[in-house]
Image 1 (cartoon, rainbow, N blue to C red):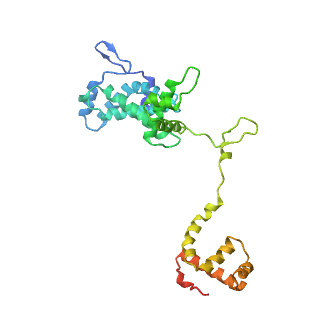
Image 2: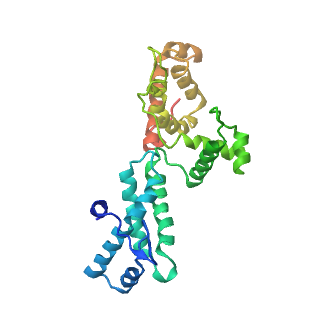
Image 3: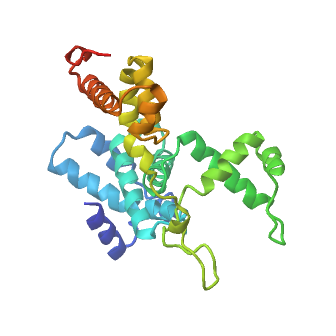
Length: 281
């Protein structure tokens, strides 16, 4: 419906009406139509009047959309969003509460701003941070000198009434509206590297974090000698023969203790319980 209405308005320029001898460019005199619309129940007649009002006021919606051009969104998409805001304004407008234009302009503007807030940010940031970004962006534009020098954080804070921490948050948010491709070159030289080259690889230790944490409690419950044997074998990388010489027991006994302790800890982690493997000297 919005696309069709937009196309019809392009083929047929604004249906401006004469009010008091003056022609309005994009604010037609549709007061009587809104009164009729409010009095009609849902049905074909009401839909027809609603479509006529949409076509009549669409040039104004397009004019508002034009204010937001060159911000990373195509003008045609902005006009579609503005048309959606116009339809919402028509549906919610109450004729006895002032001129339609006074209600429609903020409604359409708000719809476009909501589109930028919800759809155009590469990274989703809180509304408060988006507001800080907008204040900082405008202040930096106003304070930028003729030679292109950017203002300091302190100057922006003074100009906006924000704290320096808030200004820094807004400056960081300026980089959140769009992102760089991982293939973007970080250097203009022939041996330049891409952004992906600066990202670290996966740490294999992460794969065993859960296992380590799950085994900790079972290891704590082992007798001190068995904990010592496991420590010497798996952390000091000592052979079973060296451990046997260190503790004054046979290498076979060390082997049995290691197997028994590992099985006990494993069963406890899996929920089998420690009673299935009673500790023997």
